[in-house]
Image (cartoon, rainbow, N blue to C red; front, top):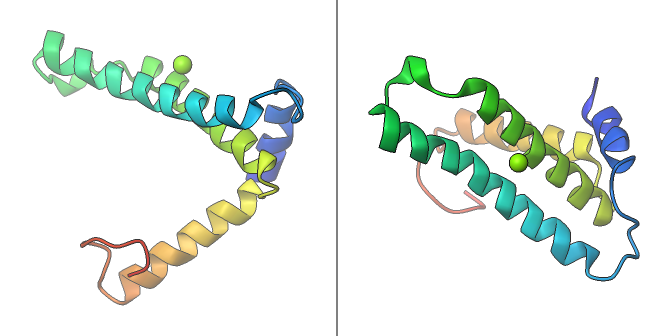
Length: 109
Ligand SMILES: [Mg+2]
């Protein structure tokens, strides 16, 4: 499956684009699901002494899937191809790697 296939699949369970407040729903959903990923790690630290073999990988995978769904649907709302986003991201990182600036800060380094 490529990213655009995934994006088309995600849209089958998305609300209509013209639903009231849909853009805000998608942004908040992405933030919320990202928080659910962080919550898995919080519980791992709090309850499992950060013991890596006991990390809830299956649960984290589900939450990462939820993040991916919101990324895909939000991108579509903004008329952005998930495949294009992924390709551009890899190109950006490869360029930074080639120039030795992967570390550091600044969106446009
Ligand atoms: Mg979730």
